[in-house]
Image (tube, rainbow, N blue to C red; front, side, top):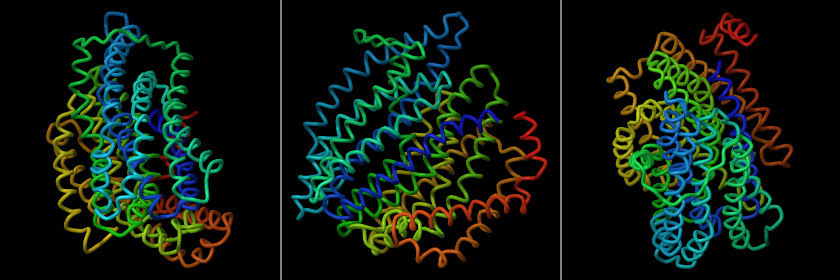
Length: 521
C-alpha cells in the first residue's frame, strides 16, 4: 500500500507533466512542424533531456540517496545534521565543477552538436550552424538541473517525493508559455525562443526546489570545496551510475545522430514525437517507481531487512507490469489514431503522423524493458553496486549501435527505435540474471501467478481496441475538441476492457479488492 500510495503521488505529478509535454509538443508541431527548424531544436533539446536522465533522474540520485540515507539513519544520534553536512560537502565540489563544465561545453558547442547529430548532413551547413546556436542557449540548463537533482535527492530521502516530481511541470509550462506568447511566422524564430525557454525553466525549477527545502528546514551553505572521503566515494559512484541509468537515453542519442545523418529531413522529428508518446507511460510508471524504490530498498537494507527489500522489488515489478503491458499494446495497436489526434494539424501532415506512428510502434516494443530497468537497477544501487549496471549498459549500447547500423537502411525511421527497444531488452535480461544468480531478487509465487494473466488481459484489450480503430479514425483529423475527445474515448474504452480482462483471466480477484479496501480503512 505504501508503494502504491507513493507511486500515486509521484506518478500523478509525473503524468501531469507528461500531459503538459504532449500539449507542448502538439503546439510545437503546429507552429514549427517537422522539418528544418524542428530538427535543429530537437537536437539542441536532446542534450538537456539526456543530461537530466543521466544525472538528475539517474546517476546523482543513485549514488547520493543511499549515502544520504545511511547518514540520516546513523546510530550516533546525529541523523539529519550529518546528512546535511554531507550534502553541503557535495554541493561545495559540485557547483564549481559544473561552472567549469558549462564554460567548456559552451566553447565546444560545435563538436558536441556534431556528436549528437552527426552533422545532420555534410551539405546542410545552415541547419547545423542553427543547431549549434540553439545548443549554446540550452547548455546552461545543465548546471541548473544538476543543482535541482541535489536538492531533489534530499527531499526524496525525506519521503517528500511530490516536491521533486512537480519540478518538471515548470519545464513544460515554461515552454508552452513561450510557444503561445512568442511564436512567430518563421519556424526558426519559434525554435530559438523555445531554446531560450529551456534555460529559463531550469532557473524556475531550481527556485522551486530551494523554496521547498527552506520550508522543510533544509538550508545548504556554500563552503570552500573539500574532497572529503564521503565526497570522493560519491564521485566514484556517480560516473558508472550515469551510464547504467542512462543507457536508454544514450541509445536515443545514437539513434538520433544516425537518423540525422542517414535519413531524409523530418526523420529526427518522427523519432522525437514517437519517443515523447513513449515517454508518457515511462515517466508515469518507470521514473515514479525508480524514485520510490531506491530510498525504500536502501532503507530496508540499512535495517538488515533483505526479505523486506525483495518483497518491495517483487511488488514493484508486479505493479510495473500491471500498468505497462496495456500501455505497450495500446501504443502499438492504436498508434495512428493517437498520433493523429495529438499532432495532425497545422504544419504536421497526415504523412508525418503515419511515419510517427510507425516509429512509436517500434519504440513501444521495448516499453516493458525500459520500465523494468527502472525496477531492477535500485537493487544494485541500494547495495552501492553501480559498476554492474554500467557493464550491462555498455553491452546494451554496443548492441544498439550494431542494430542501428543493420536496421536503419531497410527500415528507415523505424530502424533506430526498434534497435533501442531490442538493446533495452538485452539490458533487462542481463540485470535480472545477475540479481537472480546473487539471490538478491527471486520472483515470488504471487508475481509468477499474475505475470501471464496480465499479459493475456493486455492482449484481449488490444484485440478490442484494434476492432475500434476504424470507428474512431474519422474523428482524429477534425477540430481540436473532436480529436482529443475521440482519443480519450478510445483510451478510456481500452482501460475499461483491460480492467474487466484482469478479473476474467484471474490476474486479480474480488478478494484482492476487498483486502485492499480493508487495508485502507
